[in-house]
Length: 193
Ligand code: 2AM
Image 1 (cartoon, rainbow, N blue to C red):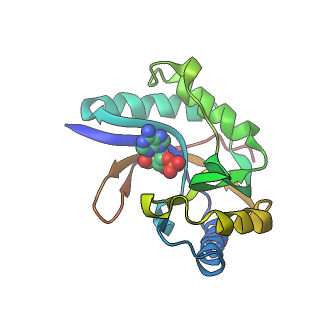
Image 2 (image 1 turned 180 degrees about the horizontal axis):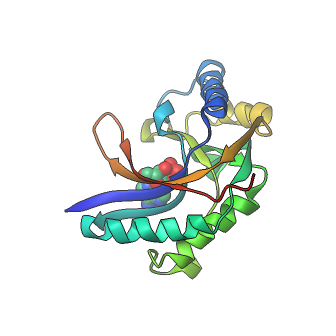
Image 3 (image 1 turned 60 degrees about the horizontal axis):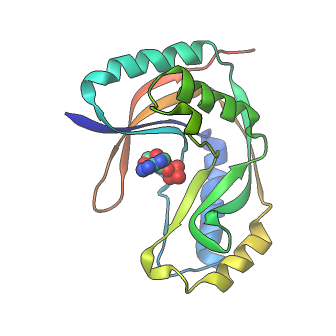
């Protein structure tokens, strides 16, 4: 059987709370019809999307992630700045970025290149972000003024710093009400205290 998998890190609960508040502000002060916000329990930063994967591969994937995490220290991550893919002028995905991308990028690169799970690691792109919401088809093209105001006001928002202590392997099940993510395994990073 195939399972849809991805590897991610989760912000700690205290900062997740601040991020929920930011999403509430976006909903209240910048109402955009057709915008679909990420459910609180689904907020995470994806290091690598693996997609449909034969479930027999899962033990091998788990042991590869384990090996990398044993050699990688915990780190602090500062969440700041709102941005959009593909661009602020043409937003499809609204995201919260990070101020210090170096450690999380190093971790993602180790996962992308050292696990052998990605076919062409040289070409794999990594842009650390937390997806806060998606602009659905209905909303495209009608909300540019609202988005300009939003980025002018909150483009440089600083949400704070969280400690990243572990990497998680997730299964994603696509359901009509939105994706449901389940943790398949947790991998502690090296404790530096
Ligand atoms: P996101 O972080 O920008 O939302 C599960 O689908 C997670 O994997 C999501 O968080 C999603 O992106 C990320 N992801 C990366 N590439 C993906 C792809 N090609 N298809 C689906 N999800 C992808």
